[in-house]
Structure formats: C-alpha cells, structure tokens
Image 1 (spheres, rainbow, N blue to C red):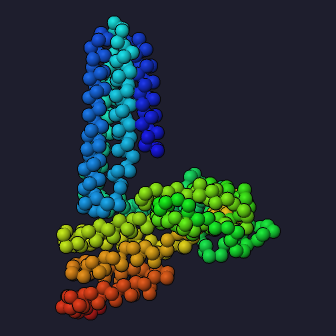
Image 2 (image 1 turned 90 degrees about the horizontal axis):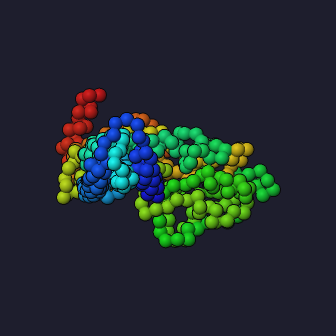
Image 3 (image 1 turned 180 degrees about the vertical axis):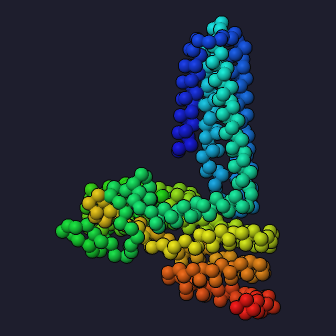
Length: 410
C-alpha cells in the first residue's frame, strides 16, 4: 500500500511540475519545438528504466530463493526498488506534461530542459544505488550481515527498549517492561483480576500475524476498562478458529481486538525476531544439502547465529500500560529457547557428514555455555552432547584429536 501511494505522490508531483515549470519566463529562451521533442524522447526513454528495475528485481528474487531461501525478501521489500520506480514514473509524467504545455508556444525558458536534465541525473543516481544493492543482495556476506542486523535490531527493540516499540510512534502510556503473561494484572475496578471474560478467535482463513498495533489495542482496552492478553506472537500462522487473545475484566468486542492485528501471507521482520534465526537456519540447511554441499557457507551462517544467540535472554512477554499506569495489553514474545531450537535443531542432524560444521557447532555451544544464558544451560548441554555424539559416531579420530588438543592447551 505504501509503495502504491508513493507512486501516486510522484505522479502528482510530476504533473504539477510539468504545469508549473514551463511558466517560468526569465532567463535565456529556446525554440519550443526541439525542447518538446527532447522532453517526449526523454519521457518515453525513461520508461525503459522500469524494465531495468523489474528485470533486476526478478533476477535477485529468483537468485535469493534458489541460493539462500525462498523466505528471504530483503531486496524485494527494499524501499530503493519502489522509490526508483516511482521516481521514473513521475519523471515520465513531468516530461509528457511539460511537452504538451509548451507545444503551442514559440519559445520556452531554458529552465524547462535543465529541470528535465537534473531529474534525469537524479534517476541515474537512484538506478546506480539500486544496482549496487542488487549486487549486494546476491552475495553471501552482505546477505548474512543484513539478516543479522535486522535480527539484532528487533531483539534490542522488543526486549530492551522502552515505550512505543511494537507499532506506531508510542503506546498510550508506556511499557511496564517484560513480565509474565500467565497471570495478567487487571485494571483497578470492581471486576479486578480474574479469569477471562471472553476469548477472541481468528475468524478468517489461515494467515501469518505480521504486526501488532499496541496503540490501537491499548486505546480500545482503556475505553472498555479491560486487559487484552494476546496468545500469539508475530510470525505465528493463525489458523481458522485459533484463539488469538483473551479479554480480562471489561467487555471488549472481538472485532476491536482483530483490528489491532495486521496479517499477511508471509513473515516480516518488523516485530518477528525469530525470522532472522529461521532465515539463517535455512541458509545453513541449503548449504548442507547433498545438491549444494557447501559447508563453508553453513559455518558462516552459524557465525551469524552465534552473534544473535549471544544477546541477553529475553523475557516472555511485554506489558503495555495506559497513561495512568494501568495494564492494558500483554504481548507474548518468543523466548531465547525458541531461538535456540530454530537455529540449531535442524542444522545439527544435517551436519552429521560435515566435520567442519560439527566443529563449529561444538564451539558455538561451548561459547554460549561459557556466556551463561538464563534458563539455557540444560538446553545447551543436551545439544552439545548431541554434537559430540555425531562427531564420535562418524569422526571418532577427529573428536579424539580435538580432545587431545584441548588437554594439551589446558
């Protein structure tokens, strides 16, 4: 929707400039006929830029889907793609409008062709930026870096930031900080905390929960003197009839809760920190498949995973209060254990025939154990034993050599 609106804005701007710029009469003048021909040639020639944009888009999307993972949509959703296309359309509208405006005149100010030339240079600059981003989008290191950066940002925002970190410019009153969604503290009033008054189920076909508008939910809950406790996290696939939320204390229609949930066909980064781990695991799994057999790529993906797994262990929910400090919305969050399972539980069995990846997995788990994550020691120990078992079953001499090296270093 934002991409389409941006195109309409640029079309309107191009139309306005095409009507206004030819009205300048100061300065040198030129015969209008060759200027009009130049504008029409430039305008229709710029349409070829749209072909370049979509050709690059199709190439990068196909490359990313077959080389990395079909869930990787960083380039497709990059603002530079749709901004460049919108600018090209706006420039075409400007050139055509200006050419028609000066068609019946004898002379026109030199400002008109200069304006078209400046806009054309800006378009070339955007195309250069687009092509450089496309080149980065088909290379491993920049892709892993982009995924890690977005995952790190989401973890910081959702688990360590203050108010207004789920959607919009800020929630109505603030965020109380991480808490436990199992027993919500209801607003002060005659009802008080207790069992849920109602449950809100998903009434539509299956869809992915992409974003939660806590501003909208908190405002609706405050008006109804209620507490909304979500039971699904962004990134979850909502099946028909799934309980998505429970309403405590007040009476709040299910439609008011559903309006605060934005859904779509696929996961997005905005409020889904688990997506980064899913993408990194997908890249590692594809690299370890017999058809690709590229363990070095899997090792690089594990490097990126460790960077994210080293983040502080998050809480399980975020509580949003209104201006008076009364709890209104509880949003569940994925736990660190969920990230660990997504990152490693598919990769470990896939790496059984790759000693370099097993060694990297072992080092990753040992590093995380030494870092000391809350609630994570038992999970890490079991996976470390799993990796040692795979090493011992297939590469016993390598495991013995590693143990000997460790004893020598100790």
